[in-house]
Length: 559
RNA sequence: AGCGAGGUGGGGAAGCCAGGUUAUCCCGGCGGGCUCAUAACCCGCAGAUCGGUGGUUCAAAUCCACCCCUCGCUACCA
Image 1 (spheres, helix red, strand yellow):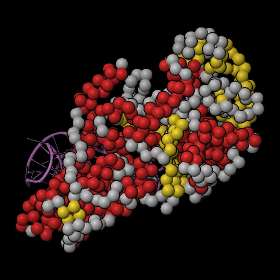
Image 2 (cartoon, rainbow, N blue to C red; image 1 turned 135 degrees about the vertical axis):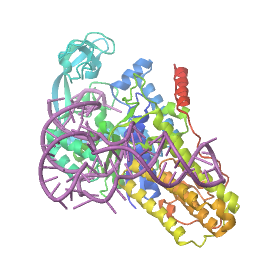
Image 3 (cartoon, chains in turn green, purple; image 1 turned 180 degrees about the horizontal axis):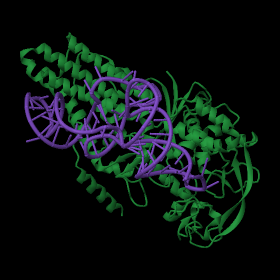
Image 4 (cartoon, chains in turn green, yellow; image 1 turned 60 degrees about the vertical axis):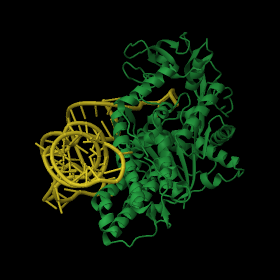
């Protein structure tokens, strides 16, 4: 038994997450949290809304509501959506939480006192009308490289080159379109170069980073780390606790990752056990896992460990950083502005949550970008979920009901072949287990599907609907075996599609909730007599056309 | 440009890091079986010179070099 802190990347709350966001972080983390719990580990699964920073402010202005109000509403919305997605968070909090804010302030004080933060003057664009110092992204002008008219301060979309915002020609504010002026402003920096060696050591010593995370991080370190700016001239954020930094806030990226710690603190505070968080974050035996998209790697392998290393406490450094590649939608990147993709609120209006969970997890982008299409969805749901898994469970239960009166009174004496089949269930289960231990979720889903396929093949080979007359013993054995496969399948499906797995558990007449069962139950015999419950088909087939039509209707309703 | 990822039968993927019997799986095509089950399930067949060239090796999809193609990132974008 181990202690695990499982975390998913904090969704940025200017918007609702889309399916790509979900599979990379939240959904993957949920699968592992559920798996770990079944294995009997102490799991604390946390995340929260990442709410600070200019994009949220801008969204709020667009919606014409105070930023705090906007953030509150969005946080609640996202939190509720995750509940509907069956994400089993122990604490889904937010960066506006007082626990987080206090923790961040104290934490940065420690780093400051330890001498890892320095200050420097920097020229920035200032908008006199909005009275705001503008982040590069919110300055527009003519690109000094290619002369394109609407280059943003951080990058020109025309020539693709990164820009120095100060060099933009005819710069204007992206919010009000007014002209900007250049002002010198003092900013505080986190001295990453000072940490290079330690961080490199950490990455080299850590064998459980996903491959893409490790190689990408090392190459960044080889190129040389640069000091990272820590402060922003905005109001919407956590006040920077450095002397002379009054009126400035901490850059969101630098504080949001600390939420991984503060969310655990908050979790135990709510339980009235204030000091217990230390048994997780300050115990080297605790394992921590982070589920993120590849765009997020440096923040978890370099910046977050550095923020922990430079404090005054001995924090557990990230054990597992599982970074997924991107999910593409119809060959293109998800894009809010172009409405490419499906968002997690829309998805639930279209299909039951387990259809999405299964489809997404079965194509989880683990070794390269993966394309999600309506065709993929149709294939996954119709052929795998419905035809293979759903139908296997249904035919197993129907056969037991029809040929055995819905009961298995006792364990039959098994033939050599039957014994072999039962053993094979365990062999496959162990393989699935191995894959989860390696965080190979996509492969684990595939092998789980194999259980159903083997069950189907076995039924066809043994034909209990024939033998139940000619050789009832044989039929009895076959039905026992497939019932055992169905039981294993329920356990193994639990991390992936928990509510369907619970259904199968109940259909089989198992005691208690699957949620409370142990992972090894997949290999265990039944309590006798086994009486199967009422059951019905688990899934229905879908039609691509109807999905597209429904999505269109939803969007028209939204306007 | 630099860095990174990928190019495997008609489509989609695994295998490659720890080289080795007939290259795996899903979808699709063709043929067959079964009729317990949601017109579902199962079996078999066809189809790949594993991006190209060269090298290492008894042996390469798998290691090395070069080249071609696709994509992502390049950090104040959260």
